[in-house]
Image 1: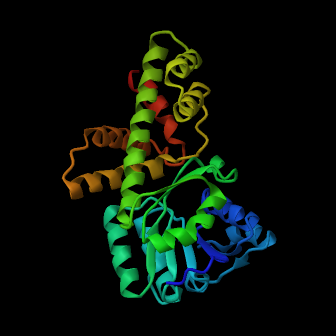
Image 2: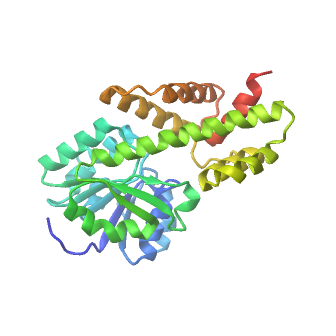
Image 3: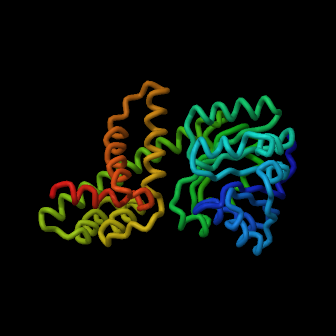
Length: 294
């Protein structure tokens, strides 16, 4: 694999995270090629100077292809097929998976890219969509060291912090799932605390002040404040949260790790989905709990 600096990056998947990441790469001076299943989402980036590819294969011909799509299934849909990323990425090219994927998918993607003489790197990100345009995401990266060295300026374009976790790409997705497990417990815990306080007569906003006084966590503060003001505009949608909890459950089964917290939060998220709350932010779990007691 070459050690030449990366000049061009393809971004495949232009949703709430992918589009601002592509903008940050443009602002950092990279030549950016974009692709999205619904082509209309690419037009604002074309106006900013990105080139719009017709297929994932065309986008991947740049040599570095970053995917930011919903899940394992969507990733494989982009990667495989006659016009897929795998077909267009040249030998030595790098596929960077920034989505949250299962450990099984990470291992299989590593295998298929290796078989094709390509490189697979896991680089999922932590941060709500509003952090992406500010370059404040946290990237957890794993893959071959030479590839990570070359990708450092790419990650720096949209990340405030980059953590390198080793040579095995599955470690990046293990870190993302483990980190999201902690977030799931935090969100569920704050939601239960809010429901309890409200039923005891303490307004949610006052409990948010209490939590801020001793937790002092930007993440905890953010979710407590959202729940206090009833703001469930989607940042991390219930549907995506449920998908991630399913991935955590699968990782637990694969590694034979008991995850009782995952089981509990999955139950709550499934109840939210049953109400049709797919597109609400997962902080809406507080309303689920508030309603449950009648």
